[in-house]
Length: 319
Image: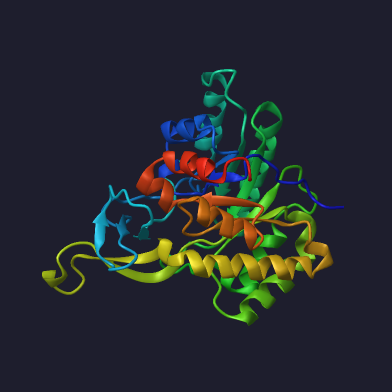
């Protein structure tokens, strides 16, 4: 029996990112008429020790590579970040959702809220338990995204790259979940990675409703100041996202959709396509290669929630 479906309309949303951290952030996204769902910033059971001096981001010119600062407004930008996770713990986000449930006007649609979580396998099992326990008393449909793809955690490479690590996480999920559960993947770059991934997912097909693909590409570097500052100064190393990632993300979504469709147990799994979308053309490309829904992060950070409204205008009613 397949797990619960992840369905929402329009098929456009934000992904886990710093612009979905606070109650105000989430309120603004819920009130945006051009999105069908909202994803919270990835959280842990006990929160993450965020440090502004360490965990940073900058927007970059995708053509010249120059840093654009944190307030860039361009049609298509890239980004590099050394961010970890949200300082707000999972229960904090559940409380935010409860408060917004009563604060939002009745006319505002109760969108699907995807609670993005991570931690070790035991902790992520607790995350599911907390969310499933809260879901019946919340009017927003809830889903859980298990983020196994952050490249910026020292000593903890993205678990989704290693089949043995990924298996440990998948085994911690319920075999018959009561709400949609998905995994957020890092970008893959060669065929055996995709094959190994699908082989690893197959025994746990009944636990998975969706895949989010892709997260940032790790070990990238941007100059975030004067190039001549000295070794290590003026540099920001971490995950790359936005426009420079777009075509790798398209390839990942296309390959994953093909392999999922070729695997009977996994055909039901939908893909949230993520990576470098900031306009209607990018949205259409993601949908064309097999994304059921399209997520944005860098586009949201650089342009604000108007990026969703612009995409809706570009695509008209042709979602």
